[in-house]
Length: 468
Ligand code: PR8
Image (tube, rainbow, N blue to C red; front, top):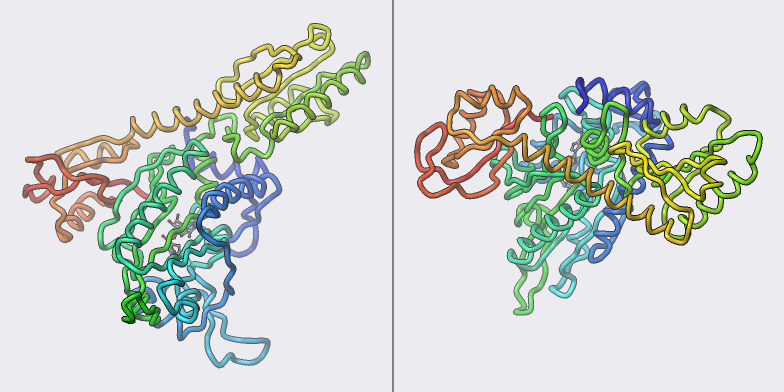
């Protein structure tokens, strides 16, 4: 694991051509080509999962002040973070326009127009947009940005509470599959009431332990109940002819998913990308001498074609630089599998394969089984990344029944689980006394368990951590 994570993370973004943060507005950066591809494959996965029963839409960026201000709790939660557009050219606008910090107040007035009858329900829409939040906490590339460039937000409306609860479960399953496909471990918890999304009944969150022991909230799912429905008057005529308010949910992930992929799997040599998002899954490095150059190149092309026909993303590094430098570069960029071929390998009808995770070299015959052998190596690599990451998480969640131990455990890079009575005041006191954040409830407490602070009967097994 890398020593100084913050510095490593900052450097790797630049060295691996992920983002450039030198743009002259704080918290806003440029996606560079290699990073943009990782982002693209990440988005393809979430879209693939959602497209099964959600529809993609696209709403405007600007939200009229009147709409943003309608839902009291919601606007209170965001008022410190909103960027405002007040002028069109030299003219003052009649109404201030907000750059969406999230799109509830853009989308729900339209839901009120579209939803008439029970046959219009459920509505399950999502969009992938940029959102703007004037974050006051320390900004960090991909992790806490002021322009969230990759905000996937889903918004659903349902006829019954039961259906909206089911939707929450569906989102949890979708996010599990999503994070699993990148080998990312996660902890799912129900946020305490004081950390619930502004306007929501309750919030379910996915958190990841970054290598420095701090947790990153990488996805959230909110049950909005009927709060927004009542504010925006989203009603429908039910089968019994009665007019009722809809039940709503929303769910979001962001640039933080890419940050997690980089942070969780990377090592001191650079990135280790899961095949799902790696711009190249296999990189072929020809070892060229004057003699036999054409034959080696022809073989590289042939292998590339075969692998591409099998659906893999492959590149040949033909640059006129030393092979050692190429190995170093692709290690840094985290290509899962490198194939090396020189004239002698060609004579022996083999290629040397090297996995990015263990660096072990294996000979693969250049025969009909090549594609299967490569796929097999990629699969093992993928499994190993995932296993290593899940093991890291398992080793870094520590249970205690003693308030005095929380600090030491967290400062040593862990997340702490403890029993809690569930009382809000008590929860806030636990946060105050330790200086850390309660992530949320992960399970019911065992029978007879006592609250770590109040000593009362514990209701929940709960997580507390140092958070990003
Ligand atoms: C919603 N409404 O907005 P949420 N930089 C990077 N990622 C961020 C940042 C930031 N400054 N702020 C939040 N995120 C709901 C659900 C529509 C969709 C990421 O929820 O405010 C976090 O991973 O919880 C967060 O979980 C996710 O966006 C959704 O934001």
